[in-house]
Picture 1 (cartoon, one colour):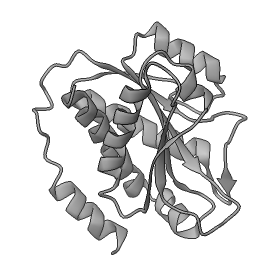
Picture 2 (tube, one colour):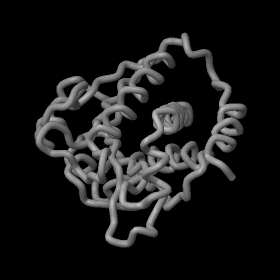
Picture 3 (cartoon, one colour):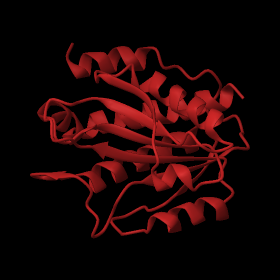
Length: 204
């Protein structure tokens, strides 16, 4: 199925379950991975830091439209140390931490999205629930789902709230990279991530 056909089907089934202007008390920290001198994974003409930032900015906009308080680790192309990002989320009193990245692998056939949580903290159950919720929405797009996985990344280990790391797709895969180059597809990915976050809070 062409990705744009899947997107149309995805959007046709994405009516909000609650009015977007309904006030909510929850705050979300959206972390655009890498930045500045840290480009992350790169292929000709496309770097992870840029995809992550563009996607994160749209996640922020969608969440604000839903009534959430949203804080960002960065809003431009700058380097922010990992622990500085975590400290900012604590300072803002965020209820969840969502870090956005792109994947890469030596095996160029590897493709699809996956969402990580940290499995050794008192927030493990809630983090896994958040990851499952985001995967559920991303699964409506034309990308293979690699599911929910546990990991030991700083930005999911150190926050003192439920935290996940979203690997949107593989820059090392030709098909995935083609999708990630599309501003429209990044927009749809962002909407799915935001809706997954919203679904998580709706189930609390």
